[in-house]
Amino acid sequence: MIWKSLDDFIAMGGYGFYVWGSYLVTAVIIVGEILMLRARRRAVEKTRQAQLSLSE
Amino acid sequence: MKLNWFKYAAPATFYPLAGKLIPWFAWSGAILAVAGLYLSFFVAPTDFQQGESYRIIFIHVPAAWMSMFIYIVMAGWAAAGLIFNTRLSSMMASALAPTGALFTVIALWTGALWGKPTWGAWWVWDARLTSELILLFLYLGFLALHAAIDDPRRADRASAVLALVGVVNVPIIYFSVKWWNTLHQGASVSMTMAPKMAATMLLGMLVMALACWMYSIAAALARVRCIILEREQQAEWIANLAKEPT
Image (cartoon, rainbow over all chains, first blue to last red; front, top):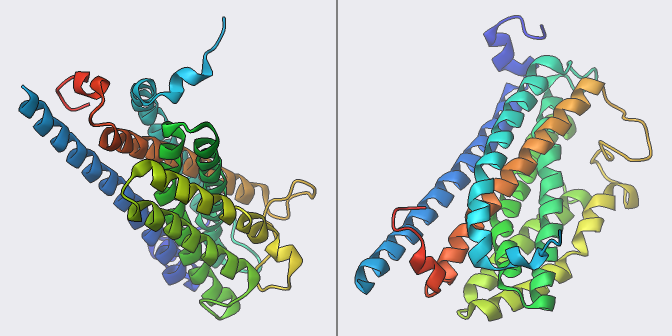
């Protein structure tokens, strides 16, 4: 095992800020993209439903 | 059996196919990411030179690879749209651009956070970093140009030209560490040399790269489905889609 404790893991040998800063921002960007895709999907779906109900 | 490759060039046939493929790519991406993160943090040993700071490599290198590779694929689709005048090709190019831009941002961001402890600087204007920054501007330029032109087919053509001109930047990024003196370390993986890093480090990086691949494909397919619906709203097949959300 590389890490002796959770604190050791978080500290990353003194580089915690840089390592976790990288991983955290990457996670935020990817989750953000997924949420944006979901929002776009919902918006398109809404317009489509509106048009369908108009055409009836 | 004769396969008709052009069958799926029509948005109407590609749309449901993409919908079926997305969960497969998304789930394999998620599983690979979990495996890759486990390898990155619990299997790969501490680097004897850089200590734990090197663990940034497991996202930095895959993100940088994706930023270049997505650009090439995007330009390829854009070119196919120009040459064959196929709507779906251009839509694929547009669907890839935001994901590529985000991976470029990730590569630049993690590079800065890696550069500070190893070089003592967040940013230096050297060939590798500058050409990667230009790649980000190419993505943003592609998106901005496409958004600025009202007629989608004209927007496709104009931005395709921009994407194709920008392709020249990709080999510049890739070979920049060879062509110029730079702070940036050389290629992590080379086809001609034995890997310079521990096998578990390399494995972690490759699994993370695969996870990024799967994620990018899923994201691009999800986005192209939105683009198809947005741009083909008048088409009969869309009106015929089941009325419940698809």
